Image (cartoon, rainbow, N blue to C red; front, side, top):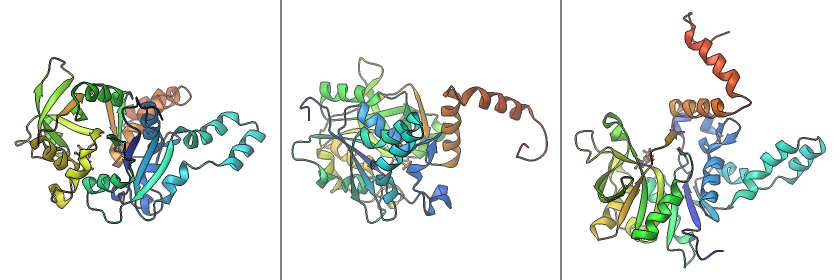
Length: 303
Ligand code: G1P
């Protein structure tokens, strides 16, 4: 364990029911839905590992054991694939189990993101003074924003979140920052944070998008908040509480891309985007899409 790591544990809240993907999510956790051939949560685990995390702490709920199982070694499958000469496929299978240590903690009742993150507090070691939180619905591209956030925490202390500048008409779906500039246009001081404000009340168009580097004090704050937006315990409200108590909070404004895997429309965009970028699938999909979009026929399914 390197003492210089900015954080060791990356918490991934994955206890939700996945209602927007029913009926598939009756038996398949939405975190395991593939982007091309790799579950979203493996992409997020790779991002956490790349940023220096040693452990992925998955907050899960009854019936979602398949998520941790995805990261367990499967030596028999690997051996079979190698025996059949499918070395590349064997590597793909092995990757998840070698990325990062996995542990799980249960959230027994769906009481909101703040409650889910709070469930992970007791699983931290005594010397862990910060944790990362990665929401598995959100893909932040290209990866690397957590490293930038760690640099900002090293400079200013406190907690650092990732912000996206989103169109005002979409802002009410997010946690929104009230910010003040620093000399760096991509780093801002957070004066307040509010969960899912109306477009008129939103203090800015800077929204939180699923990447947090939180000081350990967040776990104490999470015990002191009341239900907020949607009647749920909100992580946003715990961050806002810390700010009122003088805790420094900054955002790194990410100017790259983002996908929301949490609903079918966002998932489809992510899938298509990854496919188009893939050398073996991209060119033929591009060609098909071009024809499909030009096609003016009846019905929704091309032959
Ligand atoms: C959660 C957070 C919200 C954040 C959003 C996108 O909301 O509560 O602050 O902006 O994720 O990362 P949800 O999309 O789960 O309603």
